[in-house]
Length: 426
Image (spheres, one colour):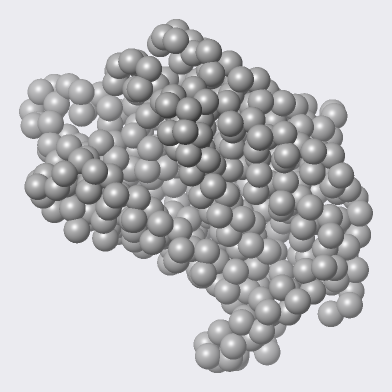
């Protein structure tokens, strides 16, 4: 295992997490609401923001398995990673030009940027099986997320300083926010250079090198169709994906709804932003910790522990009353968030056929995207029915309970044997 190659892989998480923190989570949603959507009602602006996220989601759901299959057949994971990275980088840089009332332009760029970010992650994740032996994957996957916390957190901190104190930089508030988008594109581009220089795929054989693009696309569609038809040959993987769908829906809903829930119970914007930063930096050592715990207890047991803590979090969230409670819960989320994500990726990588890893990680990404739909809907429905978001937050316990129950019945070793058997049959 080449340490330089592994470090280069880590650095990509450092690079693209800037998009997740500054554009997806903290700055762009507020800028879109306050500046870009001027001339629209608040309800319409919120609706258009939701449509933007949905369009990007649908594109990724459609494209991920197909592009993954093409990458597997042509040994071009890095080519696709580069394409989607540059797509996201370009969108981030052009976000600098978004001004008052330019909500259409903002929606277009956010859609393209999200497509680039999510598409690149499919191929980035798929490299894990190429780079690391199985016994090292829990720790390496965890370190990747830890690097992401550091990189995304550092740039977000710098951008928030610039936005909150624009006079220090001789800027207006709007200029500072626009520069924060530009900084994401530059950061993402610069820190992606190591993975393109030092991470390599196995050599192509001659038959693959001469395959025409149209033939590759046709073969990719056939491969995805074959995988869907033969999915019954991976019962353990199916069980894990269903479990992942449930508990990841709970995790994503906590992340998406926490700020709204906090604001509803009277927590100020400064405290909400501070809690987000706490989540970033507390998550660094905790993610690494769970990688080490997994080496001792096993990845599945360690993942179960993180989900049990999430169950405690949503229960305590029901009783939250002030900013100190919010800080405490944010710290608890930081404690388990990176670990649960890293271990899920690592467990999945054990049960996929190596010669189809990008295609299968496309399905993994698809499952992750679909798991972002129902949690917020249930949260909203329960909150509206009972007249309080407290009921909405406690309803998320259902996702963790079901996910944990299904996870109990996942046999990782059996899943590995199913993947090997599939490879040998081809």
